[in-house]
Length: 191
Image (cartoon, rainbow, N blue to C red; front, top):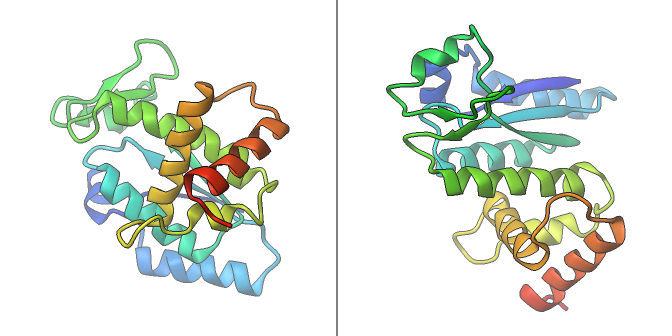
């Protein structure tokens, strides 16, 4: 099942006119996971008006705790004629000038943070959503320190992978295995 969560941030939900009951959504997702054979592909959207890195991280961690098989990390795109355009000025939304008009910065998210998240989303697909790293992923997501969350831990991994490779495309499965091994044994110093 494809489930478009978008955000768990209630303030952002109101801004984008999303009528999502978060408590019921969580209950429904848990029911689907435990009472059906449905494969859940859930979506979160980064760059929505009013969303911060911190509030997005909280929503990601909330969704991770439920345990869907896939979490698609998308970046907001402004489609012509959609109501999201009403937030362009008050939230200082800057989009690409070519389709699909991807958001590049907002009042709450600078351009560097959006680029950083874009890399993380690509690495998330390669590592988590691919299903190839089922044993390693929990280690990557384990807290780095007392304040870390699954989101922050994966962001740390993503930053390290970007620093060591400088690329998000063209990484072979072998490159990824080497990168995960290096990260866990050298950077995180796990036995």
